[in-house]
Amino acid sequence: MVSNVEEHSVDQIQSEIETLFTPCTVGKKTAPNRLVSQPMEANDAAAGGGVSERALERYRNLARGRWGLVFVESLSVTDGFLARDKGLILNKQNLDGFKRLVEEFKRTDPDALLLFQISHSGSHGRSLSKSAHVYAHDREVDRFSTDELAKARDEFIEGVLLSQQAGADGVDYKSCHGYLGGEILRPANTRTDGWGGRFEDRTRFLREGIEASKSRLRTNDFLLGSRISMYEGIRGGCGTSGPDELIEDLTEMEEVLRLMAGLGMHYVNVSAGVAGVSTELVRPARSCKHLALHQFRYAKKAKETAGSLRVIGSAYSVYETTAPAYAAENIRKGHTDFAGFGRQSFADPLYAKKLRSGESIDYCTLCSGCARLMSRQANAGCVIYNSYYRDLLRDTKKDCH
Image 1: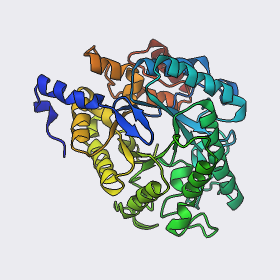
Image 2: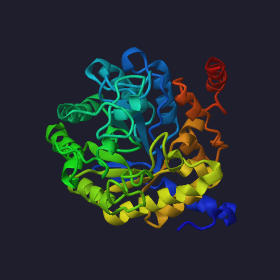
Image 3: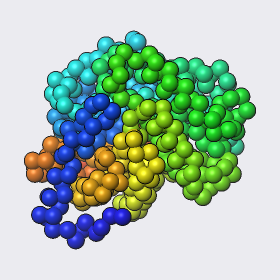
Image 4: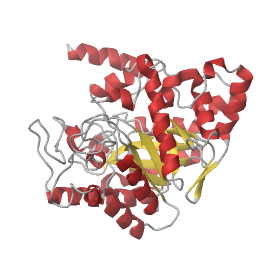
């Protein structure tokens, strides 16, 4: 699918890069280019999950970076289930802070599309906060009741409406990486209370949430999309054919894509894997970087399946200096509409601007320092190019001993 970009000349790569800076419509809005800053949790909220000065500065920097589309990271729709001890929480009490975030971002870059990723940690809370699974697992973990899942659906709907009030261009209805919105989609979810079992019941959370949100939005140009894990790499996970299956079968996820298109959603942000379980599928390491080719294949499948949805591809950071050529080729061939960068946006928030102007870029070295900070519940960022995070990684290591 992707040619050997290492054999491309500098002139050829520069020519392909121009592809990345063509505008692209999403719904009734237009992104100025095809480069996407993916939602990267930094665990640096103020008290109560509010927007801190550190968070504001991160998004100011991303605005300075002139990305086509920027996601504001994993905003919890509840203060009861949290994956991070300083995770951002989108609620009425914190709304003014999110309004300020949008205002300051748009003041710097009025053209980029700014979307809020709304989330519920589900089982990822573990010892940090309340934690529950959608369906029974081997280990002893609480299971969501019927009423609790209905409440979570309503909290997502409220999250969509609050995102619009804050001034965001749209939302990502997070359904990936083992969080609540993704777990409920799995064939392994064999609940019998209307929230599991049949495909229609496992997609009810997404379907009812999007339908109710659309009916209550103030305008018809607000963007609705979802980040999904096409294949999770676990038994009975998304991208398998049944509760006991492990081998990849994308048939049902293709139906999820068709459902999203039928609901009038505008884009899908394609990913794979489960955080902390099949991590190499989520973010391939240098030693297995060609796992990113699976992510490219999933994006291509999404384009083929539901062409009305704009498609954001993932895992480009792993290809470092050659990532732009991979991204441009996939876009030019119609395999994706956008190229998403996660770790790279931590390493150099000015990436898009620098790529366009030919400036020297701070490339992600794939050291996983940001992930280690996150696992230690510390502020997360690039430990290579930012001394604050480098010192924090050293200090938190001492605290672990």
